[in-house]
Length: 82
Picture (spheres, rainbow, N blue to C red):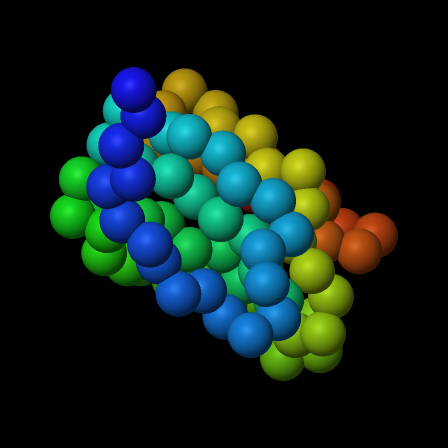
């Protein structure tokens, strides 16, 4: 039987994509940013906001790299965050 751990309110713009970094961490992409979440606590650990000119473009196709980095695309740009 599945159990709902947390219900997290996200940005009004929604989520473009998400990826597990570990069994306790998930990264979600939104409008102009990515967010790192603590799954057991349901809390936001860090938000990385990309430059002002890219705020309206959603982050998509998030891939975890070696459990300590993220590669994602935002519009025509490839973003790499460690």
